[in-house]
Image 1 (cartoon, rainbow, N blue to C red):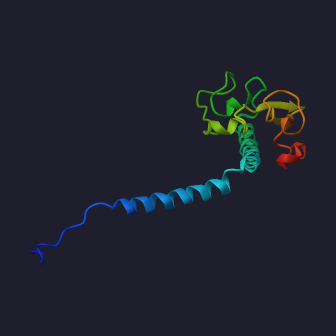
Image 2: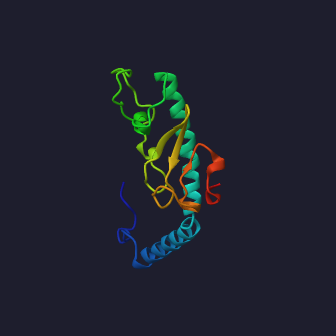
Image 3: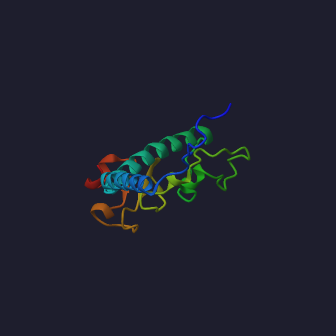
Length: 153
């Protein structure tokens, strides 16, 4: 089939004005998005703490169900991801969780597994990444919402 009007030019590409308009629109959208989500740091940390708490609590319960015991303090939470050095755990070990990021707090510090009697507790060192501290720097058990500093409740 032949095209009518052989003199008609076929337009290819975008003009400079069109590209500029698209760039302005994209820049405006990025500025709006950044301003609305850019200052959510504390909210995201709070959400990660609560999410990690739920995931790790479930993972520890599953570990107890499968292996008839919790990982030791020495093995720590790493035992949920890779086979610990334990004769009672066979070669058919399967990781309980696969996402390593859940083993670190919002400040990228590994959580610490401790026990109070037979009850597991998972501690974060807080924002300062050091033992001790007050407020946001407080060490606290993420499995106990009452233990959270006020900023993360």
